[in-house]
Image (cartoon, rainbow, N blue to C red; front, top):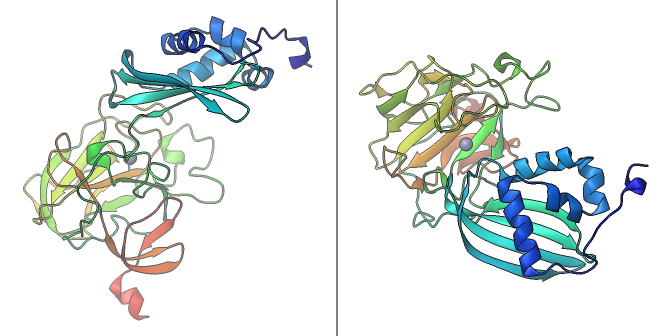
Length: 326
Ligand SMILES: [Zn+2]
């Protein structure tokens, strides 16, 4: 009913580079006029109104910050339409962002997407065999939302220190929480004990970063509360987004694998309680490069893994040596 009343002022042909560029500039500026005028009926139906389109534009811009300069732009032929691709330097993402505007054969805007311009940070550690003896840093069954070596499996991969990081949640039934999910306490992962993945010495502790209200991440304090452990092998484990005040180890303290170090929280750039884990080649994540972390003795989707890297969509749980003998 709604779509029928629309008067679509489509371009009736593929947009010129200049037209697409003007649209991209509107998207980066958070303006809707041109984008609304160019939107396909399907896109209009999807967003409902011009203010709904603004929501999509804002979601597309995400937390990129402002566009600093255009690096490349191009029109790309695609079956049934055209794509405009624009790679830009932006204030909040060191490696640049790609904005993609899709047009149908009539020249109407059908979709807009952003993604990191570099999907996988360059790494020299692809063949790295984890030297420390690592176990999963929790007991019980956890779901890997992002894990693996490719961007499609792991949204961490563009960032050098997060190159091989993983995000894990607890999922029961359809989701990660009970109730309405507006409180951290609603989430299964909230407050779960987190354990040292390996023996080592604590080299950094942040314990005073506030926990977020779910879905209101706090930019600027990336990992929030965190613990960094030096395994003595040139490898350092970082556990992030920990619950405020829950870190129970001190800098300089020697700890052993499986020892509780904190509780799962929702601090830093986190939308809901979960664990961020990464292995690094330096104690300081700001200059570290990520290393592949091969954990030992765990179940992945029910199958025993003696040594391996958790992957996206797996349910993983630590399996003790004792359990293996059963
Ligand atoms: Zn993460």
